[in-house]
Image (cartoon, rainbow, N blue to C red):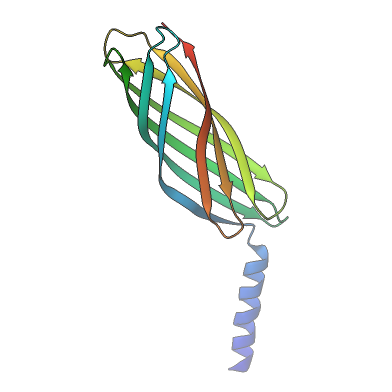
Length: 153
């Protein structure tokens, strides 16, 4: 009986040693986004709100490195002032980051989203920077900032 137990423990240990990577979903949720930007085509102020649904996966390798992949779906709705025109924007972003050692993971990724006017106002491009931080305890913080706009006509 002790011999069988020793064999089972040895096989389990060998199986663990041969394990090449460990993967985990570290975040699957929505982050609120709000911004006020100027439509560069007509100068009106557009106030947006929406969400960025993020799915973050982290894989650890045998070298002590980690690999972060993110899929981000963004939906924004806004209203122009003074026109009252509605604006919408939808985008999907993906990013992959590789890190050599443990600890805090930080990634910055540019995003670009075409903003479509639902009225007579011209469409424009909204650009921003997405910042993602995964702390060693698995806590995820994420935010978008540094918005700029570009006229699309």
